Image (tube, one colour):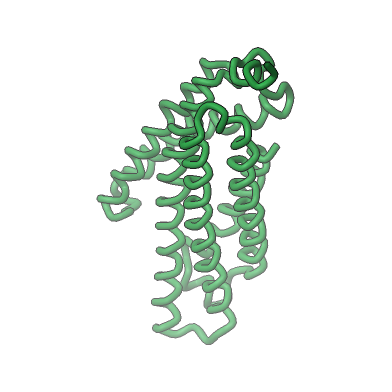
Length: 219
């Protein structure tokens, strides 16, 4: 259920931020609804809680076989949430600027804060997720068989795709005109499907009872 919460918080938050991110100067000039940012920030705070929760709740099981990797997964989720938190602060900064008289200096700050938010999204959900949710969690799920193995390939394939696309955009300077953003959008599909599968499958059926790691713990 925590994975499902990450979907219902992250996607609406991104949509709520969109006007301020795409047109920060017009937003602080008074054309935008500042409550959209406050609501988006609240949703992302809930996203942080659910993100860390997805890692913490699985540690007691995974550490029986992968103690180092399970801790690494928690750390990856924590780093991702750190980037998200910095992005929240940047968006709240834009909201604060709207309450001031918009001038050249304020416009420059608004563009800077919007750029910071874009970069935090690239480095957090757009890069660290590939390592944590994709490779680390995908590998642990594949080895433990807590979920059907064929589905774990969504993470094992999607993780590297996100890492590659995120790295390419990083060196391209995060330029929308580079065309790499379209590639990144396609590259995120397997990873998104992997996380959605985990949320739906584990909510309805839970972990596979015949998984060796559970059988060993019972014995």
